[in-house]
Length: 555
Figure 1 (tube, rainbow, N blue to C red):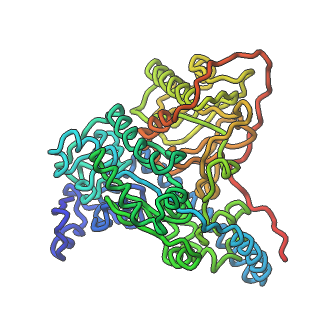
Figure 2 (cartoon, helix red, strand yellow):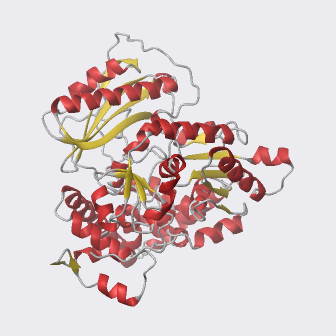
Figure 3 (cartoon, rainbow, N blue to C red):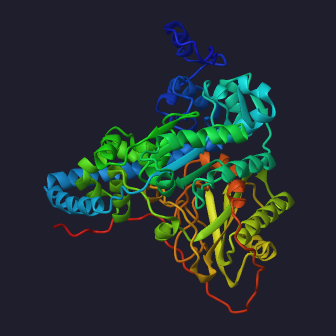
């Protein structure tokens, strides 16, 4: 496909691009219905011709394992949607929806009573963090399209590259089709960690208990800070923090401001790069904001959930509330509650320990790589266990349930797990048992190790994704056991994780770089050496990941 410069948007250009020619071969029309994470917009991509990007991605990935996996997931979502549409029609024909409307009205009232407007939360999101770090070291990169990664996969792209449709999680060879002049920089985690430490030292001056959700983003409760400064509003403080970060580190950040963390995260993406968006903390302001908010913008709603909701006519957050009876009737209790909270603009606003009940009981490290087997895979597994040991020791954690996740070249995810007869955070002990669970005789492109069932029931913070409630479970190997009483660790990036999670979108493969970020994210927890008691325990049995609809008594 011949792509003009990003600024060229004339009808002649568009006609040339729509001529149906890719590398001289007449293309099929499958691209029109093809949806991939690579075609989703990120900050800095508002003017990108999405149809053109879809064509390039489609023509360069069709018939690949990734493409077949996308088709399989799309078919799975279609079956799920068709089932829900049949149930919807049955409810309407039997006049049963009114009963669910009453139940939903009561649930909405209960949720509304939990609304907390007493806090000011900042979500500080560094702008194209990895790429910006490289631009800081080499200013000549700032004016040219650049991505961190390589031909296999890129982890992020600067704003010049995003004008061409290049984005994180995109294979580098496809990115080069979109932008032939794209420059690649290899990842440099030592640099990222150094700059992240500088940013964190600044943020701690405004909220000593800030929540780091990775190297490139943090949540700050600035309520007390504003009171101490005698400021009635957050606008000046947001500008102060942005200026402080830029002055001390040379990097820019964007800040979302709202009464809870979910809304603050959404807001931080609205005026990127180097901007802020303040959502006033009143019920009227929040509901006005959600009335025009696409459901895909809600953290935790991914491609699968969006497709299902759209097929049901639920495209905006406000639709979830206006059609609350339908949501309650069609979705599980857990899923419908999450959807209604999103529609009402409700999120976590208390301190982390107050929200601990929403956490997950696991910690994991995983890596994506070119297909490996045998000795090469053994070395990769040892590296992962070493990283996991560092993360657990930094946080003072020991656990006894171990799970190994494997993704083959066919993109099918399999997990195997067992319960150890002791609590540990030792890389040697984890590697010994992970080796027994790993298939070394077949090519793998991703492997991960998760520990759960913490000593003293410690809980790691996390947020469940709604996609995990709508996907059917991937077929697992027969002898798979689940971990910690149910659930497999999710494939989302470490910014938001869930205790139970079916296979998530493939773009999380590329976010493996951020797994290393999370592993190094401890802030001073004491280190503990592993002890190896001899008491034995039985393996915990498996459990279906998909949250099925439980009958709800109509009122």
